[in-house]
Amino acid sequence: MRYVSLQRLNQGARLARPLLDEKGVILLGAGAELTPFIIQRLTALGIPAVYIEDGRTEDAVPDDVISQETRQQALSTIHTTMREMTVAEKFPRQFQQQEVGRRIRDLFDVILGEMRSKKGMAINLANIYTTDGFLYHHSLNVSIMSVAMGLEYGLNEKQSLDLGVGTLLHDVGKLRVPQEILNKPGRLTDEEFQAIQHHALYGYEMLRAQDDISAMSAHVALQHHERIDGTGYPRGLKGDEIHIFGKISAVADVYEALTANRIYRKGHLPHHALEFLLGACGSHFETEMVQIFLKTISIYPVGMTVQLNTGETGVVVAHHIGHPQRPTVRVLQTPDGEELKQPYDVNLMENLTVMIVSCEG
Picture (cartoon, rainbow, N blue to C red):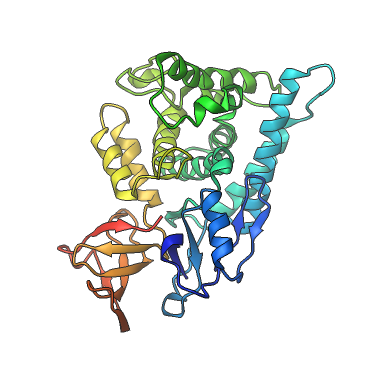
């Protein structure tokens, strides 16, 4: 399969992986023909690219750390839980939440079980979701990345559970922030920026109000925007004042947010987001956490269409753990755009003068 921009789809292209909305419901199933009308609708929903069937890359199948069924269940649970928490705040007498913590723990147990069964596999995440579904897909992706980093760091079962629950709900406080501020396309005023900053404290308060969610999980919501040089928020903590959960989730949250497409901007290229993390080592982020991130995440998912500095276009067919910027690429087009009759693979770990300069999505 191949991850291709909607603008570059050929007539008769068919979807290779289903598209999910913010509730985990299938918007469009695998095998669906991408007609001009459907492409127009997907574009309106903020979806920039999709996985399509391609016989030349049929072996390029992203090996996700969680199954499609689990992802659907997770999105549904995150959406329902966050919405219930906000409704319960507004109407505490009419609406009583039941066992929020247990529901999220049960979900995370499934996620963690699948992740442990694929331990050592780099995380493949392609940001394919509607702009309206950003909060819920973002929360799940940040949780998967954070827990993978936590396992590499050496967290035990209880710590992994607390980190997983906290990251699944780390942005719940954003539901208290006016949507017109969260999605504002232009520059924020000081008052608007402060309103957004408050989401960390809001989230902490909302999670601490749940009897069956631990204080450590709640601190993920509180600290995921803290920075080790003290420039973060809401409390401007420095260095070891920040809990390990805050340090881990900060890296995952920033990378996922940078590479995601939003209503008001297109997502950054993966290598640009990675360069930001590397440039902020020792100031915003703890160097060890970024190094662990490099060991656990595949920034170019298998199937992603990329362009090389040679001018050739190809598809990522394999990656190398610890070297996310140097995958193996199957070259499909010449620099002039001519389709190759016999595609060939280039291992960027062995061809050091060749590098990825752009990618689809």
